[in-house]
Amino acid sequence: MNSRTVILAFLAARYPAAYDENAILQRVNKSGLLDTPATADSVREELRMLSNRFKFVEPELERVSGEVFWTSTEDGKLEWVRTGQLHVG
Amino acid sequence: MSATRYYRSKIGRLPFAIRTELNERIRDGATGPVILGWLNGTPEMTAVRAETGCADLNAQNLTDWRNTGYADWLDEQDKTERLRSMASLSQSIVAQTGGDPAAVGARILTAKLLDALEEANPVTQGELVKAFSSLRAGENDARRTELAGEKQQIDKERLALDRQKFQSQTVTSFMKKWYSDDRIRAVMENKTLDNDAQTAALGKLMFGELWDDPPKKQ
Image (cartoon, rainbow over the protein chains, first blue to last red):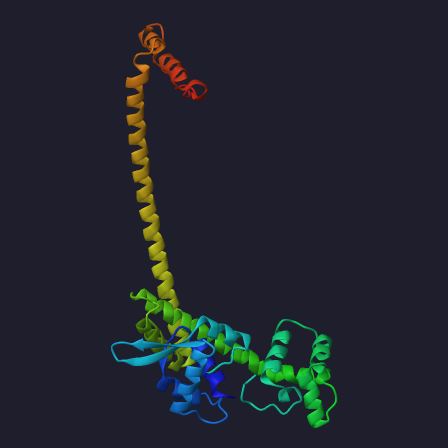
């Protein structure tokens, strides 16, 4: 399964919880759903694609730490439901 | 139906989206013949037939799928349902601690709480969810009682205001209108009428058809 689908499923099922890129990377790799393990760069790239092109996720800046956290959008949640609610444990 | 588990059956070779639709149709109670009619007619099944040289799906294939892929799918649906419920619970706990629930800080906190719930073993998880839910129910009950008390107080104050307004209007009305009315004076000065009769006569003059005689005292 491709990492874009798994990343969206991970965030959408946990909406509105927000995770940083490292947490997302660890959780999607731990899920055992990926055809090949994701890397920090590939996760970042997919998050940008999901955000800029599809509006399924969005970044939020946490001002105290300066870190970026990602959450699913309502549209992302709907897309996850529409495509069968993949479970990412 | 695990997304990664490999199913060797004909149905297992179908794409994830078709297997998901199949599972949803089974869950929604579609009959075997209807499902087979639809599934055997899909382009995806045609592709599997072309690839493997197998025959159309039959009732036994569907029964086998119900016991494997469909059972796994139900299990995953259950896990997803639990996860959504824990996410919603985490969100509401964070919301009750104050602050803007839409702010990133609240969303990060929701994630941390959800992580803790997910990492707990199923028994602890169940107990935690139950404890949080019961805490929320208790808080909601307390809030409801508080609101009922506030409403009662408001009703009392409104009643007192209404009474005060009625008294004030009655006195004003008596001074401006009724005091100079000869018919009223005649009733007031009529010594042949007892108190009840006077009240009734005045009531009829002042309120017309709207006046109701008070019940006779026993």
